[in-house]
Image (tube, rainbow, N blue to C red; front, side):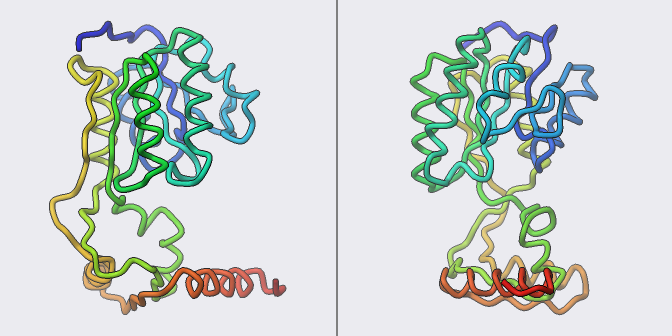
Length: 233
């Protein structure tokens, strides 16, 4: 589908300080494309939990890259994203790129909603980010030397956030991507235990991986939080 590409107005990056949003902003700025960061600390601000901030963030933009916080897989995400999409369309912002996830029912609801919305949509459906080990809650576990996850032995094609940002740049600035759903994955299937082993080998550190049930994982995280706060829970 061929649609006009708008470069005279800024591109709103919802989650512009996050893993993919930050990288996308850098790439667009390098192309001298105007960017508006969508975050609580930006001016105007954008907060998923405060819908009164959305309108000002969308004013005057030509396109938007949408990432949902905390995660598109959480219950209620589809309703929030749908509300944002409807507001964007009412303001004439039709070129929308959604960051989605593989194998997540709530994320698939968001995808279907966007496809049926009337927007000039592109969906980037991604596997787990490699940067989840270095720029997310797992970074603390890596530093602590023990990663506890209820992930099982299923292989995951971890994808680099830089590659996602490159795909987002193309979707937002080039013809031919409207109405397309792209599955973005990495080149190798690794279990989480294997991924942690690769990190340990690369850093020369002892990092243990322990599979766990979700209840055990929650207790471990709660205990770590208590120790870090030094005040109990």
